[in-house]
Length: 417
Image (cartoon, rainbow, N blue to C red; front, side, top):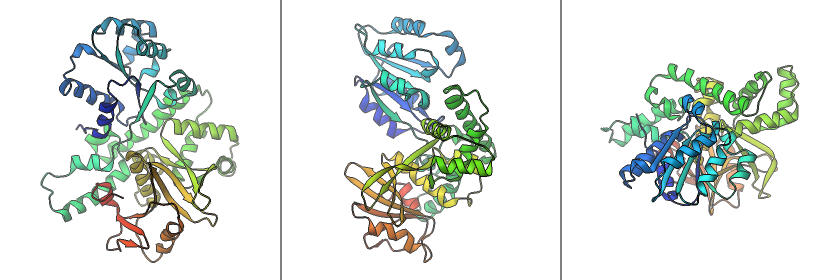
């Protein structure tokens, strides 16, 4: 079952033929390769680009990795290239070819042949300091996120589901699946088989540790501490995490001594791989971003479940926050979390151009939590909009400038901020 990534194809279409190297990044299995293939098909069907001008290598294939070094790969690409027109070159998971940078730069700056170049690869490698320096000023990045709720729901939704009430009821039920299984495209065909997907999701976490961290950073020692750090971070999504707190946790709970430097390295490598995302704190009174405090969210809801368990009621509020965080990223927002000196908090501050939207996320809105959810929003002075996203029904739509939005409606694009 193929889901067309329209948002990303539109971006690639806009960047097509611009003299930049296009790099597709994202968590493992987020759909980078699939997006490339869809764009290649678009080149053929929409732009009528002949097949001889499209050069594609998939280095997920171990035989190809063994076949080429950078020089032989360069020679072959040059021999295949059309000498009169633009060649569209796609190098998928190219980081496993040693010195591939020489291939890319040579072709990008070629004196006689013209190439429009597209790359995918491990985030931890493509955006290492060496690569950033090597490609400075020559690249544009497309971060391919897991499928959004709306993208997956649209595929499963019944074609006869025109009744708004039935549609909402079905969407709410389907959201429970999405919260547990997430949006990695390779799982879609087995989305109704949670047991099969559980094992696959656990495997992706292990694969990320092995390929993006162990191999990339040449870790020779036991990775038990790293694996336990992932568990700790996922158990604390949406909460303040700092290296000192983690150090104390390992000392008291795991009877293990882990240095501050090691903790910082591991957190950095995990965020580089996008298995986790890091967001900063913003002081809503002082109007400044703090560098000392951070919060983390999982790169995919299914991966989160594979670590903390598939009981949807466990850490349900934080799962909902993680859902909203990923949706905000998908919609192109820069995201921070807010607080004030009295430790009042706002879940997200979403920024885009001149927008600064303050957002609280809560499963239900009732007398017990209403004051808490409103408090920081009402104090915010620089917000363009103030939103509470909730699963609660039959609540006021607007109060003191705070707009209450039904979560499902927002996820399905029926209501925008």
